[in-house]
Length: 201
Ligand SMILES: Cc1cc2nc3c(=O)[nH]c(=O)nc-3n(C[C@H](O)[C@H](O)[C@H](O)COP(=O)(O)OP(=O)(O)OC[C@H]3O[C@@H](n4cnc5c(N)ncnc54)[C@H](O)[C@@H]3O)c2cc1C
Image (cartoon, rainbow, N blue to C red; front, side, top):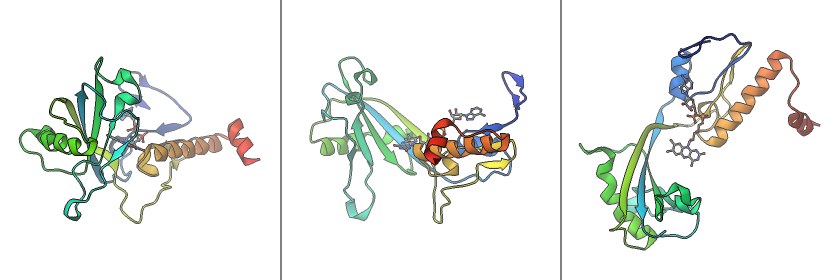
C-alpha cells in the first residue's frame, strides 16, 4: 500500500474501510452510490427544554410533505460536557437536499428555530445559534432493490468495508467490518476469534 505519510507498506491483507466516495477513488471500478445529505443545527439554551436524553421526532406532515425538522435532542442531557459551560446544547437534524440561498444552510436557521419552539413547547427566541454542519454525503442512498450484503472480499488480500457495503447505518458499517474480518481470516487460513467459535458451537 502506498501511503502519503508512511511510504510503502507491505501487507498480506488490505481492508479499505473508508466512506463510499473515498473507497471508489482508492479502488477504481467500485460502485459509487448516490447520497442523502444531513444538516445539523446546534443551539445553546440557558435551560434544557427537555430534561431527558430522548430523541424528539417531528411526526407532523404539513400538507403531506416531510417536515423541515426531522428530529432534535438535548445533547447535554447525554453528557453536560457537550454544552458550553452552564448551558444546554440542542442538536437538530434536517434531512435531504435543500435549496440554500446565498447564506448557505444557515439561512434555514430561523425556520428551524421557530419549529423548535413548537416541538419543545417553549420560547426559543433567546437561544444562541452556535453552528450548522451540512454533510452532503452523509448516508449512501438505498433505493430498492437494495442489497444489504454487498461483497466485502474483492480478491484474496483486498477487502472493502463500510456502510456502503451493507445498510447506511453504524450497524451496517459494523456488520460489514465483521464480514470483512471473517473473509481475511478465511483467506489467511486463520481460525475465527474465540467468541465467534463459541457462537458457532
Ligand atoms: C450527520 C450524520 C448523522 C448520522 N446519524 C446516524 C444515526 O443516527 N444512526 C446511524 O446508524 N447512522 C447515522 N449516520 C450514518 C453513520 O454515521 C455512518 O453510516 C457510519 O459512520 C459509517 O461508518 P463507516 O465506517 O462506513 O464510515 P465512516 O464513519 O465515514 O468512516 C470512514 C473513515 O475513513 C476515513 N478515511 C477516508 N478516506 C481515507 C483515506 N484515504 N485514508 C485513510 N482513512 C480515510 C475517514 O476519515 C473516516 O474516519 C449519520 C451520519 C451523519 C453524517
